[in-house]
Length: 188
Image 1 (cartoon, rainbow, N blue to C red):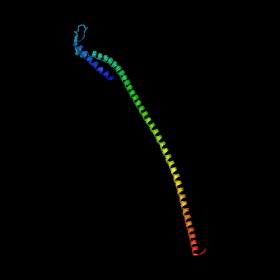
Image 2 (image 1 turned 45 degrees about the vertical axis):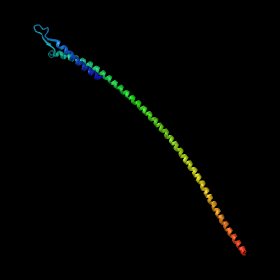
Image 3 (image 1 turned 180 degrees about the vertical axis):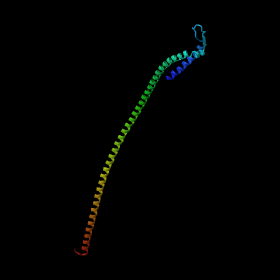
């Protein structure tokens, strides 16, 4: 909006120059118009502006001051409008950014929640596996203990059987020797 006003002011100044350039050659300016005994001096075109510089200066200062005040007022309003527009644009950008940030936050929060649930499930599964391994270990320990007991019982039975066999062999040898003695005629 400010650039529009500056362009408008440049156009107005160009239009003023064009207007004055078309009006000045056909205008007659005079000096001492109603003074008795003095012949009036006439000026034409832009040359009159140089001779009548006090009038031109007053016109430029008054007219320029009023135009400058009016332009300043419009410029301030335009600047306020530009600032309000920029503020609205920034607010819109902030709202969109906030919306995107909230959406991304929700997305990440959902992903984190899913990961948390998966982690708890994996922990629970790991605990179940640990319990299963402990259960198997206990079962294997019990089976191993039973196998050791059975082995020890089998070894004991084997020892007992061997001892019984050795005793029976000794008894048989003693009986055989008695029998041999009886058959040879010896009496015990």
